[in-house]
Amino acid sequence: MKYFAPVFLTLLAASALSACATPADRPGNPGFVACADQDLDANLSDSLCHETRVDHSARQDQPASLFVRKFPALGNHQGEIWLIAGGPGESGASFYADINFFRQTFADYDVMVPDHRGTGYSSKLCMPEETPDSTGGLALARAEWGSCFGTLYANPERAGSFNRRNAALDLDTLVSTLGSQNTTLVYGVSYGTSLALEYAGLATSDIDGIILDSLTPEASDHLNGLSYRSQTTNQVGMALLDRCATDSHCSLGTEAVEIYRALLEKLDAGIDFPGMESVPNGDLRQLLGLLLDVPSARNRIPDIIGALSNRDSDAGRLILDVIQDAESYWSKISRFQQATSSIPLSAIITGSEFNSRPDLTAEQLASEKANLGFTSPLPGLLVNNRFPLYEPLPALALPATMPPILILQGTLDPKTPYATAAKHAASLRARGSVAMLSLTDAPHAAYITSQDCLAKPLALFAANPEAVASETCAPAATALTFR
Image (cartoon, rainbow, N blue to C red):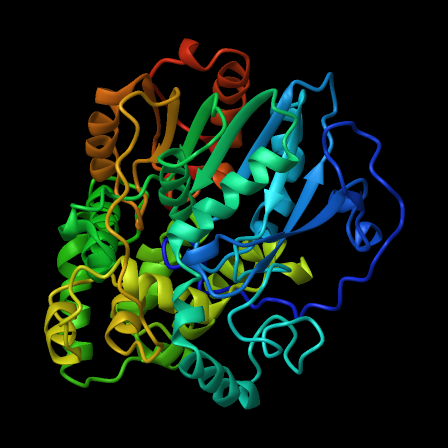
């Protein structure tokens, strides 16, 4: 996700989803059958699957197929909680590794996990190139890129229909037709928070509570948009080094910031350093920026800087070990064959709806990058976006009165900054009850790293959304510690 998806993911190719004839037995949820992949992973063992066809008339040229996986309530059924994945481009499979946390926390709710249009087992932008039976499975194989682009440019109207507004309309259709009409909760992550709020603006059925994990900036907040993602990442990275400078256990000592700046100056001057051959594309700024989302790898950033600066012969091995740590961290998601992120969908939506600087050039980007110590690959993808883009629809006004909202936000989030989320929260408070759970030193996507802090507030929110108050919690897994 460009708001959420980890670049280290090496996602598995998906196999075909075959039909299964065992019906679901819960009233009010028609058409669900036992999922064909139940036996592939213990987390999916009792999941139920459904495919829905939607057609939003004038808003799209042809119907789309939407895939939904349901995890039945473990307790007495009171309603549904809908998990809305990030991206754009991520499927609901990004939740599967942690699905038992959601099921236990919301024990009296069916956990409903849809695939956005364009992701997972829902209709794809490039068909058959992004379908399970194609050469690369859900991922695009090298030979499939040409025909994919051909398909997109041959029918740009169809490509433009895979937009955020239609995705919100999809969600409204799913909730109103597949839900029990009892309590309805919505949990969005990153881009999914934007989609959840879009849905709130057009919902035709009641929403009883909204949980926003890693809240994206308001649409008008251009300086914190995706084209400035490297600046956001850099703020968190430099905060990390400032903390290092005050920690007696940190290998860089009190001159942490100065040591790193000196290293970058020499690298930019073309001086070779042992170990740089292990840095992907030789881009240290980007590598360290990506590591900020993985707590254990993030804590090794000072060691990497120190090893390179000291010309340590083991620097290359250290870098490879930390990269392996990050890949292992994300592998729990990538083990699901459905988890492949859609690059075309991500590129089209981000380029069309989330780029506040469409005139940004590669030269300008390079100039900005030179002044930063930690960067994101995303702005570069916006500059080189060759996908057919669409004109975004005018912003949808939120209802005057919103359902209760709980925001989950890490204080060291390198993608959706804490201060920006707090500002957005203040704006939302004008429309209803808003509580914010501040997660000390947590990075992006709280449900992955901060479950020890989330369990009680989320369970309380499920029982009585307006009873949850703003508070701060320090997740054990996100402690900023240096060796």
